[in-house]
Length: 499
Image (tube, rainbow, N blue to C red; front, side, top):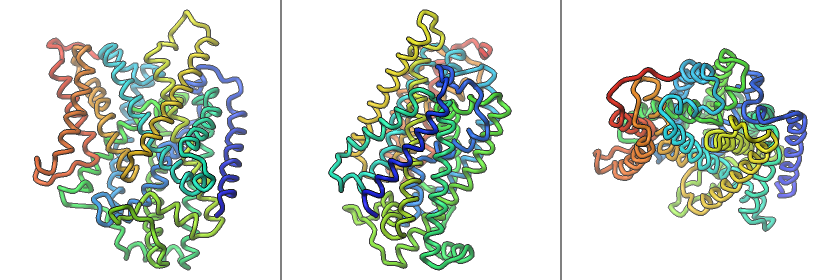
């Protein structure tokens, strides 16, 4: 597929997105930006959250990791994480959402202010910003890197220019409408992403002359379908991935302003809960599709003797498998839908992040929402400045990540999440499950020490624990260390939770 056709797809899709933005952002104000005037339709939020939750990481990395037969995180082991997600989303629906609605929160980190004080409040907001900036950079990187490799390198466009243009487009369609716009654009993007995955499977089936039963037979008799792993030393050990997935869902969705900002834009807690439950069911099915696609990609490559890109250690570059086959081996129509799906997976990686980062900084650090000395227009100008500043920060982090990345992005993403979302998990757990107050000024120190201890343990686990390797359960350990630290600095006298 030529670079010109790919470029036309990118431009055409971007134009469609701007048309939707123009329609949905009419009459938008600061309240529209932060919580969509609390009038979002729950079914649109649920459906659109699929694209925001999966993003380019799932689109590229999950199918690629299926072929890692020699890896501790290969084959269908990711399904163990997905099972954990299901239980995590139940916690979000029936514990966190009622709390957020009862307190009428715009920023979910305001809970920490009411429960513990300003230091805890700002610490929670800071860790969200840190987590979301790097996490979004990971997600955007994997998509832009594909476009760079298959399109813009050929045109002589530098990587940083590609990223800058990509972020500029996202800025233009989010700076005005915020959540009000994103609810609709995410719906559009989810549709195209899912269509791309389904059609990719169909195209491979056609090339291999398979029906559905033939696909089942091929995959079930392949080397790619082991789901459950019983070696406790591996990262793919079932309890590690199941409970890691559960707490990753709680932290990366339930304690994440970007994801919750869309949920609390629903009219009431009942609609928000319907949204999460619907989202959970769809997410399960979609992730199964990605795993099936991954197995088919490797089976097709083996049978057709398609060469796959290798790294310096002669291991397959897993993030390159899906784009390489879709763009070069399945025909022009497959390539077109792959590019559209890729872009659809890319935009949600940054649009919601920019909106949520701006919201948290403006509300939690600048106090704009409750500021009575500034006019709405002055607040809007400050919001614009913050929005553009975070776009510049994302650009910088993505370029740095391009220089240092040497692993599949999904592994990097969840490793980082374990370190940065862990303190949030510990803070909220301590707040919800105890009535104790803490010495608030010591909370930032506890939330810094806990991840550092986890990093040291992770880097030395094989000799400290007889070959044991930490996986997704690191987020649980991090939250536990934070919880223990908060217990140490708790005040002796118990007080009622301030709600």
